[in-house]
Length: 115
Length: 113
Image 1 (cartoon, each protein chain N blue to C red):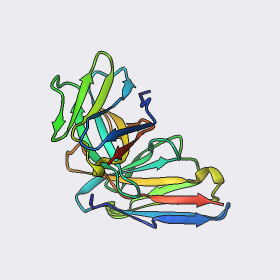
Image 2: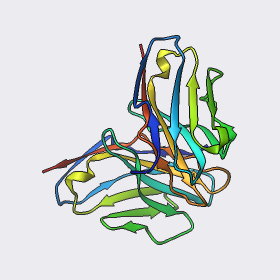
Image 3: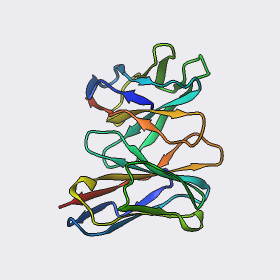
Image 4: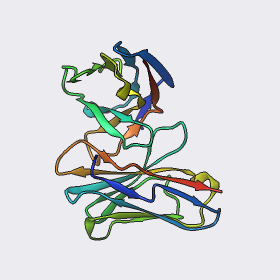
């Protein structure tokens, strides 16, 4: 079974600075997807960024980028130029490439932005 | 807005009572998932529908839980004889077409007292 581990329950960053959230996972599959989801307080969980395992290039979405290390089974999220609206719970999630799309989530990292 | 709505947003019930939650995805969401999220944890998979067919159920889904998706539109999740351990946030997510992005609802927070 796949597992996802987020070892940082809480992180904080000064507004406009850069922060990196860590995620490691365990799987025996060679092809899969990895995601970072953001869950603001009392709001819907939304996708921040996704990475296909077969792609060597790290995904980037505006201020959000990932460092995907397949051999190390590591998938960290870097947020540049942090904004107050980035404050939320961030979940790392894994999905296999076969069968259905059920996601395996980590326990989350609560990110606080300091004005 | 993800287009997925869940009702109610909050539910407080007494132990032993039955509760039912509803999820309304957008019409293009042919696949629908239910997850349960307890305090301090990430969401855990409960069950999955492809249109109206329930194709997989987690071992977390005991006999007291039942889910339906009539006509492949909205979905309901019922919990019979609720227990305190059922207290959690219940999330619904939809997928459209061949997409890989899950669109989540805001969830229903259940408190069993």
